Image 1: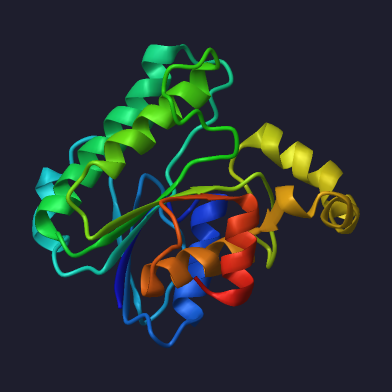
Image 2 (image 1 turned 180 degrees about the vertical axis):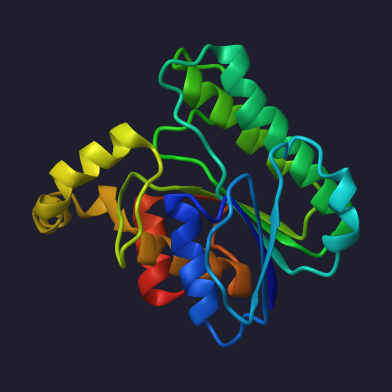
Length: 224
C-alpha cells in the first residue's frame, strides 16, 4: 500500500504514522502538513506547506496512492464560525477534491470527532461544521470514504498533542486512563488503537461509513 497522511505532526496523525511505518504491507507514506515531523524512515516522504488550502502546485506528487488519512484539525475554542469553517470544511473539501480526481480508487479516511452532528444543522457550531464536512466528503467519488469519530484519545509511545490546553488535560487525565477505560470503555481509545483501526479500514474496508469510538476499538482489536 501507498498512503498519504495529512497532519502527521499532530497527535492523531502521529498515531497513524507510527502504525504505517511498522506495517510491512505499507510501502510508502507521504506526510503532508504545515509542520515538519522531524522523523526519518525509508518508507517516509514529506511535503511541508504553510498553505494547504490549495495543493495544485504539488499535484504531480499525489498520484498512485491507495489511501489518505486526513488528520488535520483545529480546536474551535475561540474561533468564530467563518474562521472555523475555512480551516475545517473549505480546506478539507479542497484537498479531498484534488485527491479524488487524481486517485479515484483511493480510500479516504477523515478524523472527525464524537458528537459530530450528521444533520449539519444543529446548534453547536463545531459539530454542525464537522457534520457538513462529513456529508460533503461522503458525496465525493472515492472508492470508499469513512468517518472516524473518536472520543477521548489517550496518547501512547511518547506521542504528544501540539495544543497547549489539550496537553494540560492529558497531563491530568493520563494517570487515570486505566480507570476511564474500565468505567467508560465505549468512550476512550488510544493513539495506537486509532491508528491501527484506520489502517485496517484502509486495507479491508469498514462495516459502515461512520465509525463511533466503540466501532473504532472493535476494528482495532478484530479488524473490519
